[in-house]
Length: 147
Image (cartoon, rainbow, N blue to C red; front, top):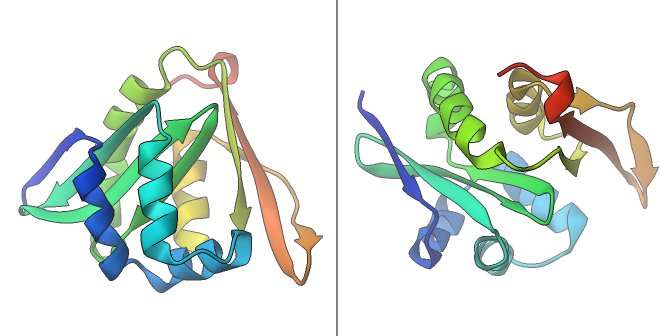
């Protein structure tokens, strides 16, 4: 399998049609927007980001917007987690440069995203109920992590 990546572009929002169910559920729980609108908005508002391709197929996009990190992906990243984690760690090192702190709230049901964030060195707080759905506050601080 060949893994490549490139800087995030508006056309990468096409991934929304192929998202993992966990990402769709989290988008619905957070804001009720359609996945297409939510992904396009996230891409448009990111200062930095990357698209990851497995054998030429768009498999994940992630970005940073005002200190908030986000990720959505297809089932391909679940099929090849080690390869995705290793590649994304290299990308994260570049993208996180200049940010003393990154954070987000993650649906407790989105286990793949939580595992990815843990792999990157994020601290994951106990879940907090927000209107019937539980979320973890996740935080990464550059001084606490040696990537």
